[in-house]
Image (tube, rainbow, N blue to C red; front, top):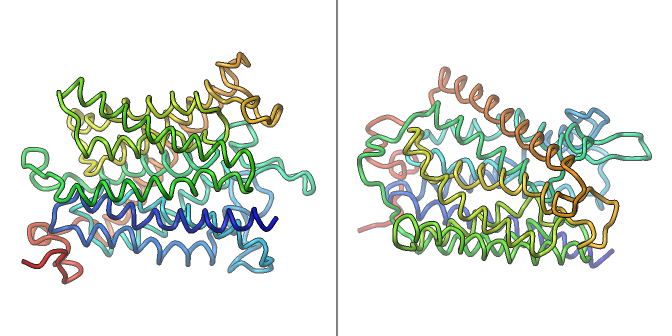
Length: 406
């Protein structure tokens, strides 16, 4: 038990460290005049979400017996034993990084004040229900059958559906309401510091071991398998993305390497503890290659997903979630009967269909609710920066600071 506690607490710290890693990853991809704003959009999530989670988020996502939403039983963590804090605060780190992922899609043009309002509203109306559907497991003692989707048999080991698909679909809805950056796509808007982006990718990969292996909730063989799968899929994602770049563009880029690592990690997240190493290799390679193609769709369809959140997180999450239906392998984890095997093990299409259903439901729900939230905020307080603010740069406009003093 002490070993399990030590591993989960360490994993929580690793996931927390992913938020500044994500900030660097996104910040390097932004223009220099908006670097600090991107850092702040990420870091403010570490201020808002913990308060939200303690007051109402945990209670509504994880208590009660309703399959669709929780209860107010643990409002302000009322009557929660100290030993239960371990799992609650581990979940909190997941909750904190999820809205931060969305920030990359709206880079360079969203009001900071609107972002501060958007985050808790989105958490309440989108993240909390999705968590209740996917991560509330059956309890024999109370007779609770589990959340809406998990009770049907869908699998999400560490948040591919709840975190990545939900955030990616939300990003698409938000950019449609927000509109394109001024000058996009005709004016060049190249990343200003790819060194930061590569450093951020390394921090994310490091933290992802806590994200995935920590989701075993024990220092056991499943955690070891998830750790190995995370390492493998990140590597294969990088190779898949670079291969696609090389074939299409004739060269391999550092931005592609960093993006491929993240795509592979996103892809393996939902299945990290449900498949063996060969499945992780296939998932990582597929996520890297397909996401490299998916990020180009914004130019064809005209939605300005500034830092490729839709192409990497929504598409990567969908790939990983669906491929569980092919590569889920109870025998590889010595957990026969704990969950259904995928098509590769010959157990039929039932799991695959449930994976498709769960990911489509969460994706559509997140898109629709986010569009409604963004539309309402835009009609009331406005969510788009002014022309003057965007030309000056959001660092000076909103934070009265500059990342670089010449």
